Image 1 (cartoon, rainbow, N blue to C red):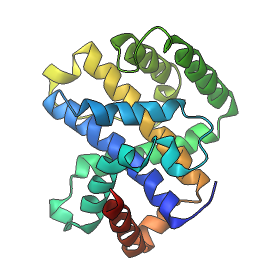
Image 2: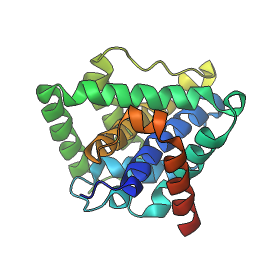
Image 3: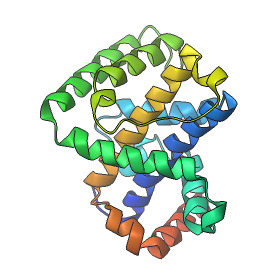
Length: 207
């Protein structure tokens, strides 16, 4: 896979897309199902040839590109700090996961097993979210520091919502893996914001 700025921005948009969906479910109890599906599908695209291929196509990460654009370009007091915090936390957990070969193997096997059930259930079926959520709890959720999702108790106490949140955090960490594979780093975000923003807007113009 090429390590272009384009690929880095697509991968980072995948992280922010997942973070945005988590924030919406936690605070509103819902999010766009088509966007959720694009993020969850990325968990099962193991051998994509391009960064956008991980999300099916560029439109599959369109929401993430729009969120990333806003988070980079807005004044500090206009940014959604919850989304930013979730994104930072997912990138940090990916680093911990990548340093744990045993857990990586368990995650890969678990996702392969879940992929096998897609012959019987649609990707958006409650059973699929339950299985992904359980795998998240058995693996990534044991890493420290845990991601603490803030939101309305009435929504987060709903089992289906809770499993969607876990599955989306999983997809964000998968996007963070892709970002690292494309040589993305925190230094690029801190000192290359303008380049990231320019590339993000070029990608948005393609949608």
